[in-house]
Each structure stands twice: as C-alpha cells, then as structure tokens.
Image (cartoon, rainbow, N blue to C red; front, side, top):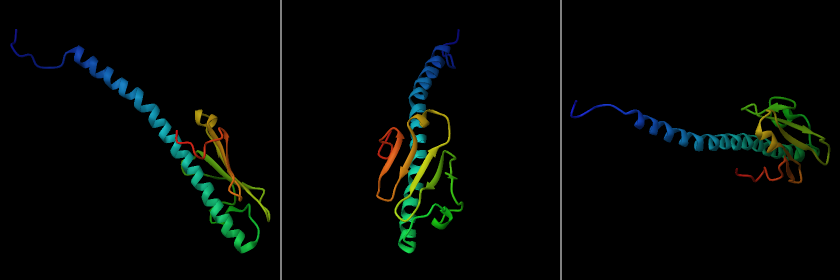
Length: 138
C-alpha cells in the first residue's frame, strides 16, 4: 500500500453534494421571491409613471385620457411590461377620474399573491388578491 494516497473518497464527495443541495434548497426559493418582487416593482413603476403623466395631461387639458400615446407611451392601451409579466391599461378616463391597472399575465403562484395593481388620481392604490402588495417586501 501507498503511504500517502491521493484523491477524494466517495464519502467526501457525498458530503459535498449534500452541502450543495442544502445551499440550493435555501437559495432557490429566495431567488424566486426576489424575481417576483422585481416584477411587482416593474408594474408599480409603470403605474406611477402613468399617474404622473396623467396629472401633467390633466393640467393641460382639464381631463384625463385613456390613450396612453398621449401620455408618452408607444401604444394606445394595454402595453406589456418589459419582462412580459404584467399588462398595463387605463380605463374610465374622463374629466374627473381614471383607473390605471396592472394585471399579472402568467399562471403561477405570483398570480395568487399580487395579481392586480390599480391606481387612481386621488392616490388610492389597491391590489388583489392580497391587499398589501403596494407595500409588501416579500
């Protein structure tokens, strides 16, 4: 027998595989939550931009608009966010109000959490099915 053996035993290799499995089991759900929050933030940012542009439009025209091209977007209505996760639309615009809505497009667990965001000119922000999606951090 050799005095000094070189290489990795099967037991050492299995220990490394188990440790990597534990790390992956912890990291992957956190990554998915992070990705979902990023998609939500994208939708909220689009709605806040619409609200800002609607107020600017109202100052010039004394009314709100459903036509998003008049608000500086490249489509008249129903544009999809950059990641393709939310559809943004404006409805019910008149001299007094409008409703801007972001609707989640994919059928996964996020749809059961923060599937819809809305904003109105008085600053009301709502979400469904969970009511705290505008302030939610997880």
